[in-house]
Length: 51
Image 1: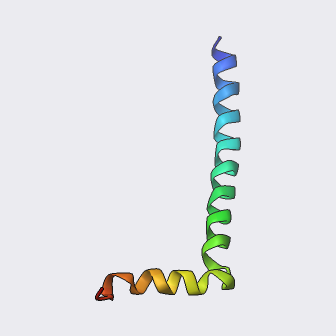
Image 2 (image 1 turned 180 degrees about the vertical axis):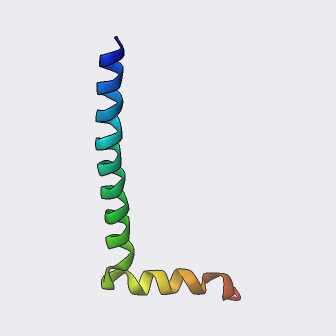
């Protein structure tokens, strides 16, 4: 049982790290795409608008 737990823990740590790094990179690419600049600029000015 101990060997099974250790193998599963190593698998989860390795692939979990790869998974979260991939998610982080996807979010970074999404946020830094030039085509999203207008959207994020408008969102940044939203609290300053007087409706």
